[in-house]
Image 1 (tube, helix red, strand yellow):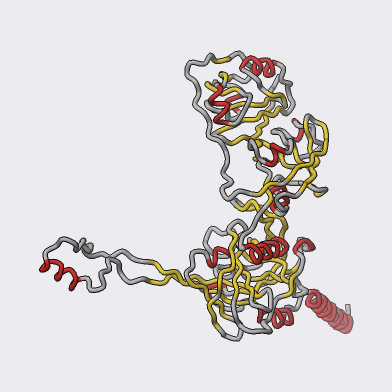
Image 2: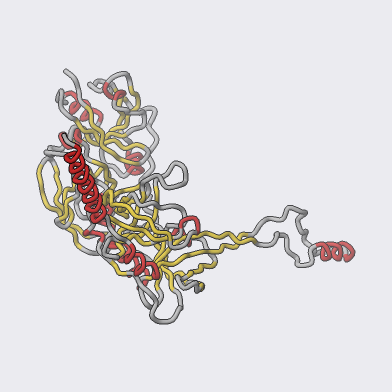
Length: 474
């Protein structure tokens, strides 16, 4: 290759590299206009909470009945009659955004929870006290109201249902007190369930979120709010690449209820559900793992009155697929109490439809019954293939556990029962999709269990029911 050829190849190569760099740059989003237009509607939120500290000195005695000389001494020592030290003010910091021109502001409940005073600072540096209209701890949302005159800047609302994994999103907030900080990333997933958060299908992103971002908006590229930044997954206290936002579709439903009633009412079925894994799917005759398995139906609840039974697998609600068990609380929670719902379920390996009325989620939804105490004198049935001894339940135990059938495990010996984790005190109500009526019935069902096939067992432990699966070898 001559020097001229090498020179030409160099020129072409440099041109190609420049063209590729420009092409990549052209594909990256430009957030400047979005930030300029949306940031005025984002606000900084601070709170004050009065905390009384106990005095470290001597306690003020009761002055009644004391001689005048002693009463005069204590009155000089405690001139204000107080036994407590002066109050100090605890402050928290978060973000929020204006959702209407008349001054409604949306933020996280945990930003303002327990506050005696709430202050909102606007982008033009005006600061004013806000009124708490209502809060919903279950969705971690709070609605505030400020009186700031007309023509407040407001955000534009989008539809979180239209989001797709891989989309660019942007957050504006006040991490660590740095107001109007902007971070960007992509949507990782939708419909995420977090521990103790049953009624919010979170949006997962990799947008950098840190303390102070809570309550701030998450925007799409059209400048529309599609989420409220709420939580992060962290082992260090700082951002580790996993952020979770409340979908705006859920949030605005909460906002409307807080505006009108000051509280939020959610739909409720009154059932305990669990995930359907591969073995459970095989046991219940499903082609693939899907749906929500009903492990327990609370007596007198909406599910009980509507005909749901333990062992039903809910596949659809009002025509919408229930893929994961966590999809069901999200879907039911958004239904209005008193409304009708149609379910597609699997029962006894057959598909059928069920119509019922949705109930109202109670304030205290920890409704599981406490287990009864085993009778020490009850005869135990020990002749079964699982290597466990079971006893009959007394009428009192059945009443305490809200069951009409079942047997209690008294002893677990080495064998299949021990391998699947059964414990003394467990109550077995169903085995291989059959109801266990008595100890003799349990032994009869156990004697006919198939080999090398998934077998399901419904177990109640400490008042909570769940299904487990196992296989018997030849």
